[in-house]
Image (cartoon, rainbow, N blue to C red):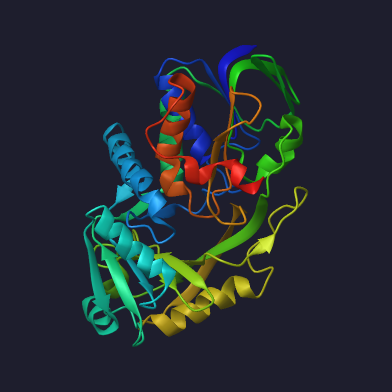
Length: 375
């Protein structure tokens, strides 16, 4: 069967692209080896932070602001809560690159960011115990995305727009020939005018068929929920947060609907091969020890570890994204290597991929995300 666009990988980026392309009138096929939302990718775990003044680099700010607009638009189309404005507190040393980038982004883009000392942080939010010498940057307009609900909404709307979704379907091969792309699955073969690859940790397996080599490393990651005092940590008065320490980076969420505080470590993790599944939580001592040690040191309340889960990152060497056109085939696009900080951008990445196919261009600057930087 022939389609205008085939999307391999219907997770966060792929499902968003499927929605925007089907909305534009394109005949779209989405293929996924699981049944999204699911627990084998990078969107698992209920929640993700969205920040605007971006510690990872000022080049992300315009995308983050557009992503926020699109999330709010999407929320208006459904009866599901997709975004919760908790505010986000970023904590680090005054001279850290992370804090510097946040303050620079705020100044350049006129963003509302409040700079706070450790004593001010601990006074405003009694649940923190930030030591002297660290500072915080607080964004009131940022907050939390409900990641799995976002994908469910994109899925529903894309199908309503006429998109076809094939779940639990493994792609066996991809080949480009002239102005057409051939996609072989274990069940059926398809052709399309254009192809988008947004396959997360499955992307490296597809690259040989496309004649591309990219330095992508899937990594096993974990996150945990802690029992807590709702009076201190409930989402109505406690923010989402990120802490850049000397050798580690942690992030977390307030207690939403009394689920407890959620904490994860952004760096570290266990590299995965294509053949490996995700080892269950607790298979490594650091799964629990890292977040528990962080919680004990930087929070004033008693936080008792309740449960942990796993997910995956697919990292690039510089931890920046790849959003680019195939160097030899103008009808093939790749969006991958989101390195654990991509979900918040999935709305705008979906829009960008749609624009590249329907208009041949996007107004947002993709130069920082070209695959040529690894040549």
